[in-house]
Length: 122
Image 1 (cartoon, rainbow, N blue to C red):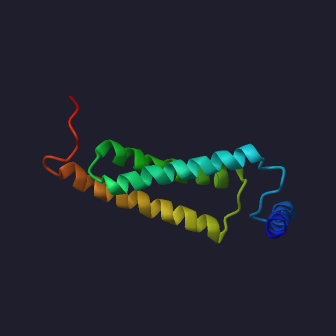
Image 2 (image 1 turned 60 degrees about the vertical axis):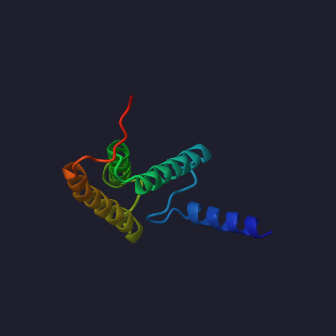
């Protein structure tokens, strides 16, 4: 069965314990699912922000998803030492940094926009 082979291959990578890999003892199913839910949630928030870019509240929440995500990986790298400084980590930190900078530039334009399309509450 192809899924059994993929699972065995994944477990072999996890149990190798080489630099930049996690051992099977550092991640359990709950932690993996929690990280998956975070990824899904942040993707939904970012997609909604792209649809309604003038919604300031949503814009700030989206900006915070990038800040929290980047902070998480920086803590894992420098504080906890659970990940190695690999090209994968560099890619994650690069995307987060560029996204944060881009959103901060966009925020200046959003703040300067007269009569923003922010919906008024009754």
